[in-house]
Length: 252
Ligand code: G2H
Picture 1: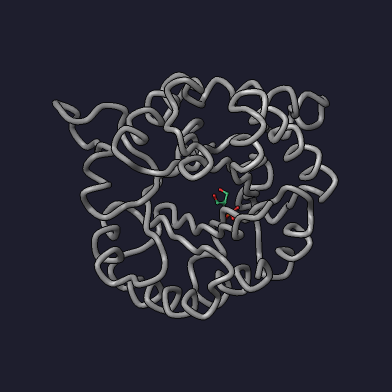
Picture 2 (picture 1 turned 90 degrees about the vertical axis):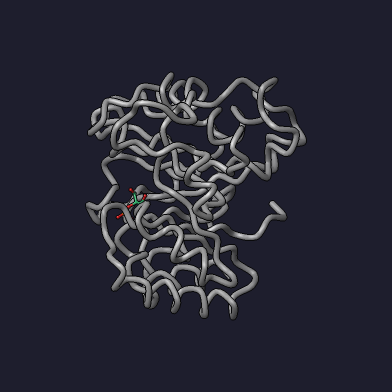
């Protein structure tokens, strides 16, 4: 991989305007770590404020609706988040698949809408503990990812620029349990093979695959040393500039 490591903070449902100072600190630190591409996905309510101030980091959203607009009370479209300054959107996170019953087909429709709005997408995939224990994790993740991604012929020409895949084993999210480096390596290799199958040798080899699930400053270096780990999607440890940039430093 020749791409810069991609370190993305997923603030989940954390953050009021008081967190803007943390975003500023992340932005300042990112200006000193140019070998790493740093981004944060705050709640919708902070996207525009962070976008206005940030000089180095990109700001994104954690979800979007699958249609452009209409009678959808409480929903926010891809075009709206792009208008607010978002450059990317996280889609198919397991918390949305579980808590909002998001199917692969719905996630795919959201991806199509986000790409049409000019956004980059971070497509999440990952298995439950039960699937990991049964030995079916790789087959499940490949099937889930293939079903969640738009068909190759509808993807933009610059697929590798517009798509990032995030492998997040569900049992590792917010639990402190990190997948072993062998397990991460095996899954990222399987995802790489699938991306090449779907998008061809050139584009499929360039799409970044990042890891998520209890990434912290003290385990990040070992994770980034695994072949085909192109960065991290970070939840809890992205909420303070110190811990988040500690992870970014481990990637630089
Ligand atoms: C996984 C991750 C961020 P955490 O959801 O997407 O969260 O780092 O808290 O496990």
